[in-house]
Amino acid sequence: MRSRTFLSLSALVTLLVAGLTGGAAEAAPATFTHPGVLVSRPQLDFVRTQVQANAQPWKTAYDQMNASPYASLTRTPRPRAIVECGSYSNPNNGCTDEREDALAAYTLALRWYITRDSRYAEKAISIMDAWSATIQDHTNSNAPLQSGWAGSTWPRAAEIIRYTYTGWPNAGRFATMLRNVYLPEVAGGSSSNGNWELTMTEAALGIAVFLEDRAAYDRAVAKFRARLPAFVYVAADGGLPVPPPVGGIDTPAEIIGFWHGQSTFVDGLSQETCRDFTHTGYGLSSISHIAETSRIQGQDLYPEVAERLRHALGFHAKYQLGAAVPGWLCGGGLTLGLGPITEVGFNGLHNRMGIPMTNTQALTERQRPAGSNNLFVAWETLTHANNPN
Image 1 (cartoon, rainbow, N blue to C red):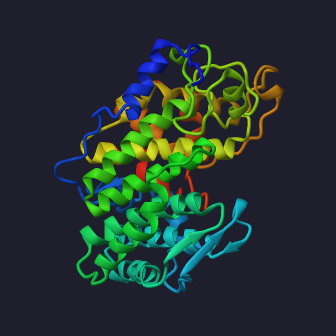
Image 2 (image 1 turned 30 degrees about the vertical axis):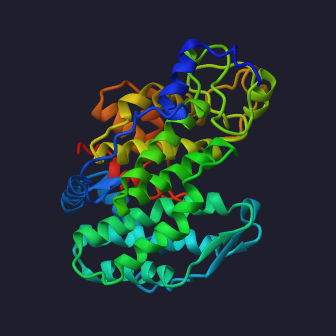
């Protein structure tokens, strides 16, 4: 068995808390809150009030959402029995269709709640029904990630419709789809780059909320706690980052290789920083989404993730804003493109918890209104900008 003596005491404690030893640190809610995946009813009510008052930045964000193809009442869903997604979605047999239909269902659900126009709810339902009547499986190498992307978005839409609109006869069939097609693909986690497992865990958590499955919820939280310290470094971890929970990456050389050759570690550095900011952003987005959903469900992981998330958002925002890249960081070159992923974490940490986040605030405000990454992130200026609920 390989030694891990290079790990600090704090890193070992982190691993224990993460649930790797079977500890009972999880706490699924005795009663689930609905709607309760990423957005809650009080949050939606706040957004609706701001849009109706033509207040900014929500009105501009709402207009941006409405102008997108995802908000269209004429959209034709394109479900498939088998969605086949290879590396980088090549082949792409239903991959884009599935992700975008899920985003459309969520967009239409938001539009329903804000307008109370039943046409949008019915359109969201028609998209969800089309997929729940058709899909059977995901195949090829990107199946877990594809399931994570779509599986993160479907529950957001379904929660809003099921708990704020009267009349969804096939809601049970949709729940069966989530349980049988998506949850088995994402619940086991991944040994790939951290954004995979974090997105898959986000999906597993949202599905657990919709299904009111306390065991699935606890498994997702345990996965999250194990992966987070392996994705975002803080100095308390010691000289090297925490190893990922699975994958046999244990030695210093293996860890440095997993961090794409980076050998100098500072607060907020991500396992994928030296790969590119886009994939890093996927992981940071899922961290924020998981914390947000947990807070709605009464568990609130924000205090637990605050140190890593605030440093990670600030570190990457600094360079996304144009700071010079030092030679010790990724060989002096970064591939930028963080994406519209800062609103949820910034609101949770800065506006609710009062944590100063100068660089993150500057980037968040510069990027408003935050749109969609066309994978699993959408309209977060609208839903989370300065949202106190």
